[in-house]
Image (cartoon, rainbow, N blue to C red; front, top):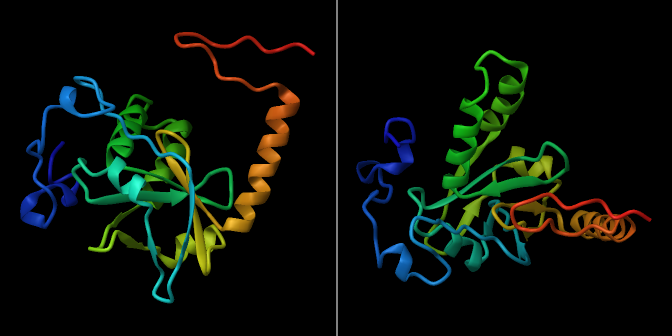
Length: 192
């Protein structure tokens, strides 16, 4: 990764150094050698102050603590009135996948919009971010925000909208008999 491509990565620009900090990955709990684990779990509802600041859950901050950018990356969801978010490593992975597409294809152009709308939001000393007005407006967030863990990524919702969405998902999963696929292969649809 080049610092001129991502200005927040260089120590000279106020970012963290790319040098490893702490014990090797194999000695860190929940990590295997060569495997990065960025896991966002649970749902947290936090207040948004009048300046648009909201505290990012400590477990979410911990999930991105060893990344090159001290914050999160957030963009408007393609599917919901919510925000999709992750650490910068996930965005770099998505960029690599986008670059595998034909540069002039409609699919490349459609997915490229995601990067145009994405915003890198750095943590302040209290672990808060400032939620930009355009992102808050997209998700209808005013006085509180629900941070929803989705494993490798997360979403930020207006809490009552998320409660409705969650109820819909639970009912759909129950009706469809949704289950996780086995490791290494797709799951067969349950016939009813």
